[in-house]
Structures are given as C-alpha cells and as structure tokens.
Image (tube, rainbow, N blue to C red; front, side, top):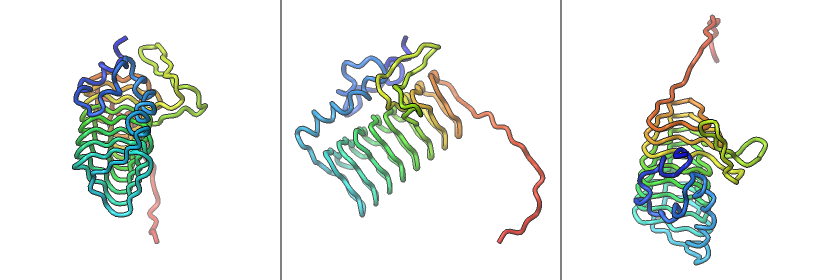
Amino acid sequence: MEEIKLKYYFKYIEEFREKEIFENCTYVWEPINKINSYLKEKIVEPNIKVNKAEMGEFCSITGNYFIDEGTKIGANVSIEGPVIIGKNVTIQSGALIRPGTIIGNNCVIGHSCEAKHCIIQNKAKIQSFTFCGDSIIGKSTRIGSGTILANRRFDQKNIEIKINGEKFNTETDFFGAIVGDNSRMGANSTSVPGTCIGPYTWILPTVQVRGFIPAEKRILPKAEYIIQENPRIELK
C-alpha cells in the first residue's frame, strides 16, 4: 500500500540536510522511531555543542546541539538538546525547541511555537502558538497559527495509522502527524494522533482531521450556527 510509504508524502528527501535519517526507511513511522538513536550517534556521543546562530536576549540552550550559520533566534527562546537546526532558520521569540527535533534549512518556527521530537524539512513554516510533536513535516509545508498536531492517545496505547480501512501499528505511544510536501494546515486546525496528510493538500482553518487524507485535496469545515436574540446590555 503506497499510502503508508514515505515516498507518497515526500519527494525531496535528498535535499534535506539530515537525509540519512530516512535511509533504510520504507514506512512513515520509521524515521520518527529512529530520531533518538540518530541524534545520539551524530551529536550526543561526540558531545557536539556548536551554535553559529545570531541570538536574541534571554535565550537558553542546553544539552547537545548543532545550529548552523545564518540562523536567527529571537528573544526568550528555549532549546533543549539534542537538536539539529539548519541554515537560515528563523526561530521567533518565546519558541520552545524540545529534544529530538531536527530542523532543515530556511525554515520558520513561529512565536511561542513548541516543536518536540519531530523532523521539519527544508522551507517549512510552523507558525505561532502551535504544537508539533513526534511528526514529520514536508518541504515547503505550512502549519498555521494555533494548530495542534496531537501526539498521544488518551489511553496511552500504541498509536495506529488507519488507511483505507486497514490499521498499522507504529510501535510507539507517541506519534503525531505525517504532513506531506507543500501541504497547508490552516489556523486552529488539529490532527488526531496517527494522522497522515498527503502532499499538496490543504486543511482549512478550524478543521479537525484524522486517519488518512489523500494528496491534492482541500478539506473544508462544515459550520453550523444557532443565532438567538440578545439583550442590549451596557458593559462596564
């Protein structure tokens, strides 16, 4: 089934600065399960602590990290290693970059965004007040402000991916979303753990998605309102 394979969602892996993490991976959950061992070998065991970024005031960086040149980190940003952050990345004020995060080149991490144990490919933008956990974000994909990529079931069981009626066990109880290249998630949208969104698909604002969303689709909200009379009250 092609819809559970990485190549369905991502066509530009060879351009990604840490493309080695995708080596020998076929299915979408495999790179996420490799993040810790990959970073341990690459920057933890050699005790890498390299920061070439332009830093704002009152920032905190702990653990092991490699942050490349041209990157700008705003005020009050917290970075908890191990992390790898590419070239010409903008991390806006108040963001929290948690362990296991790998960010490609020319990305934007918005104000008060939280990124945790995820792979964010080149030119992706994760906007303000979002949570992106245990997920893979494709090249040039946009995650709108206030979006939540939920990454854990209420019962804390292993997360399953459901595609075309068939379930696949990710072998982990932390798994957010797969969001393909050039896709968009509108402001205040949400994804249920184990969601897979194909490339060039738009999830419009406020929509909640789950399961498998095919490539090149547009998902619109269905809004229903109840309008009632309201008394005229002067507010203090």
